[in-house]
Image (cartoon, rainbow, N blue to C red; front, top):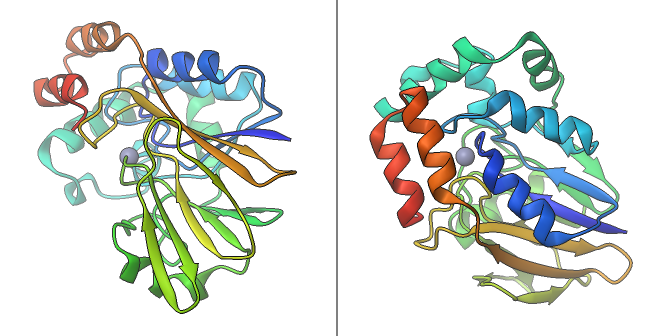
Length: 240
Ligand code: ZN
């Protein structure tokens, strides 16, 4: 089975469609949350995910769009975007987001947004944070998002090693436990504005990271039209 592993779509339909086109036919799409928030197309992104039968978990921005968390926990721009999203999404989008669980287990994989011990808020940036989460899930591997940066932590003996995937990086899963972050689709933050995606072949355990160009100006124009904060518009060009 070929699985497109995506996260942090952030209501960016142009980026999502570019990624789906570049990856080609897949058997499943798994999404590690932050489907909406920041971007101009929350309803269209959710409609696309429904159309392709994506399997998803809820992120902090999805929870904010539903009014489940206080936007004062966000910085000013994120809060403004969250309120815009909250006031705009359709009842169908709201219902679909509200039905998303915080975690799912599929075979050898646990899917969460932030971390298994704190799916909503914790960022897995460091090997120490990853090691502290090993007891919080029982599958061999854990798929995460939230940082908008592609990153792998792999337990090798007693040591948690760090791998920083770039475009074309391949990795074959084995008995070692891993945390796998595909990187962000809708708002990459590692200085490369291209969208991130990770392909998983479940039979072989082969993972491939991809960086995919997308029509940045299109989304930026839609954000300006919507009156979303200028800093959020500009950061898309820089990938930060
Ligand atoms: Zn996010």
